[in-house]
Image (cartoon, rainbow, N blue to C red; front, side, top):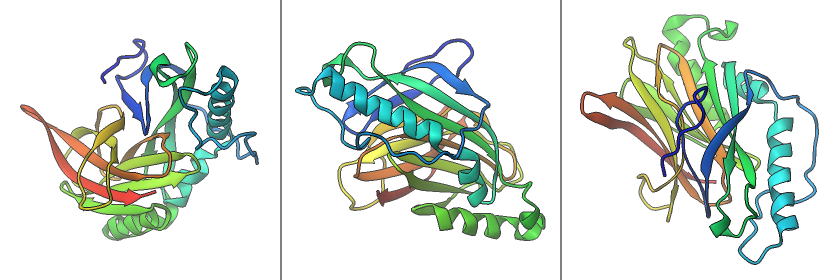
Length: 240
């Protein structure tokens, strides 16, 4: 579904594997979470159901909030040879039709990164391969796209991330989308879990969207803006 946030935020399309969500307001912007060690009181990947109590739903949502707030997103970016430029943590509302109490929210995370400033990647002729190698080492799966660019899928705890890095010389505009797929066969799109904001990319620029997702089959894609809509520059698939 398509939902817009307040005027200070970009429009996001949000759903979760088994739980549809509606985008709400920003709860944190431009800040880095601390790398505090934390073990949630409940397993955040165990989604409550229609017969679950309000207390069980609240415990699940609290565990997800704790996981996001104690994840060192800057370190996660650095491990892929990139520098975290900005991070938006947004609240999303779980519809009551899923069994959740009214107004229950969980977070999604959107990041912007610079993959050209790391000293070890300073030699431009070698940047594309070295950055791609660093990304692939952390990600579960990566694929080359038109552009050229790289689209990747990564799991960190209860969250799956779809990210796109651009390596070309023009300035394409587009967005990253994360999907849930019904099977592991082939590699295509599926049911939308989350859609990131639309950006104009420069060389080495990366944008990602991270959303709650239980174990399953997923794909990520970069959609480039064209005169008459958007075209899929490339898709990556994995079971996470």
